[in-house]
Length: 291
Image (cartoon, rainbow, N blue to C red; front, side, top):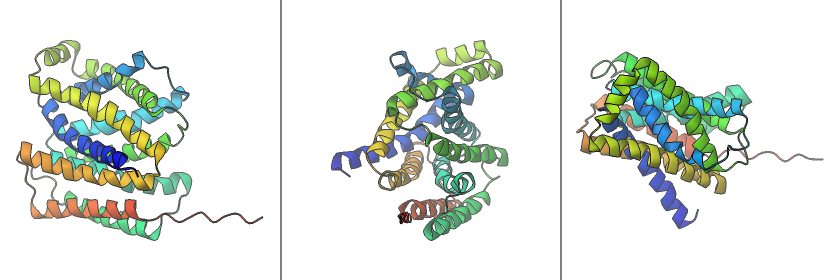
């Protein structure tokens, strides 16, 4: 990879890690549904100037409902109900584990031996984290958060079907497809008056946080990530995502003073180690056909 692109990949990981902190700050002032809706409404603004990419509406909605709406709404609910930001950033990145597992079911892809080892190690880490649930946040909050990596993985597999389209255009329209149902859900669950009151009474920190996760963490960062995946192999780009939980955990410890007990900290480290083994392992080369 070019030095400039290595910098961009690192920058995206840092932006996503800090995005967890910004989400927590925004959730201090907005309910989860409204915050998630605003995130995608801001990120969907470029749709005013961009035509819809050559992707069918059913596929566009399916990708958006999993990769964006489901993933980030589950994140917001989990964090809003007490799951520490640093832990949330680790749990979300376990999507790599579910992506490999679901690819076996959906496409019959056989994982390598190292990927199986990585999955096993990451699963052990998740079980260690499960052993700490119920002390400082509820089992329900953890269960909702676990929806995030699962639907994230489904979205990754669906995204494979949207080929040869401009990444920025695609992600902008995916955000629009997520913002519309979230607006309806917000009006139903929170009510128009409560939603308007929350938005009109946001502090400067809340406004900056929601603009950051909408315009920077969602729109710009996903566009840069898609551009890198277009120019390089996934094996070169995806390992940079391993920086996200480290940035998220470090930033949350500084901003919110979060501390983790020995078992939870060990579980987080084991999960990241398992993901690293999965992402850094070499995939088997295809056997050439012999005429």
